[in-house]
Length: 359
Length: 226
Image (cartoon, rainbow over all chains, first blue to last red; front, side, top):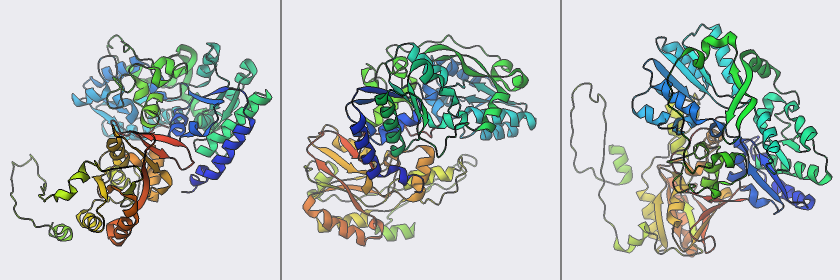
């Protein structure tokens, strides 16, 4: 398959592995902050190809995992309203809330539909004018522009019964907080598709303020191995900077049109991250101008008090200070079929990836 | 039904119909049960009790076709993919294989949970390991494309016409060549072997030379968000 097989070429991967071995002398911890990277690294068995000096750890890059339990609780509350249809990406359906999940509510008769794009949710709203159609917006700069496009389209087409419930977040505050809090890392494998939208400008503070390098990487084995090599070289020569490995997709300036749409619909606000707590200006809130499509402003519901599960260490795993295997619940009380924490639900979650590929 | 029965070489010996109230069903559903005889000398095949290190793992063709055909047909994705389910009767192919080899030590249909689930179930708690070579797996271009798009792993996608066999290494080529002659085995392949390392684990040598464990699929695969 074109544009895939070239990046899974064993000879190239092996050559890169050899180069990494050649350059790496210090023990380094590199963190990936994108769930897609977590999955790829495990799926292709990348850790097995690296020398003992290079350790990979997963950060808060899985959108479902960092989303708060109270978000799920509120979505559950919306779904119990008679005139509401919930539309969502499949990942979110099975995430446990404090006492229920969307999956369970669906079994009890709530109208909850999995969609693959916010545009499908808009179509549902158009066909069901007497209902309020709520789309659960999660994800980083990657999925947020499509949510923005959905809102703009709803406004233009007069689809007044369409609402976004936004838990959209932006990545840089989390990356800086991790270093600030003293999580020991030596460099970041930068998120490929977030950067496609934002460009490389958003990471410039990281080498400047913290002396850590960021290499924006693609998702195939050759991409990841090359990004790791670039980081190792930066660390060995003590020249931290922002570099783009994923040049076939990521431009330094990013996708200007998508950035404009984000800015049109959203403004920054403080937001809660699993494992990190409230981070200043890390959330995307719907601007007043589009308040008529903001589920939280228009649809009132009573939400149960949030209860966190006992024993789950999702938060520490997301900060990279613990690994899934350190959790008492891992693969025992918590499995993909019956998850306790969000990291086990999403296929980008660290626990799910370890459960499937590295147990 | 007559056509499929003829192809499979089975007789339809009895049948019954039920009619229910209008609005309760309004469609035609056909349900079948099959009865066969188990040759005592093949009794161990369902258990895999004769498996030993060095045995080869054989599958009769491409993986993931059925599961992805169902996903594409549901049409929620607006993917126009040319994927057909591999649904087929395997008794002819299996009989051919059993005819040429007395060293078929295990056999299982790789349905729900796919090839990966069959292998990890087989190896669990056993005194051997299984190594699969990812480069030997046959996955059609359209199935691969759709899996890439959705973030699915084809080794966990359902099949409806695939048998996984463990065959003594001295007979592996013989079984393979009789499969090649059958229309349902033209893409058959030796995809790995039984090992005495990594006991109790099935593991995959990835296309790029990495290694990973093949675990049982728990729950279902979900499309990725971004």
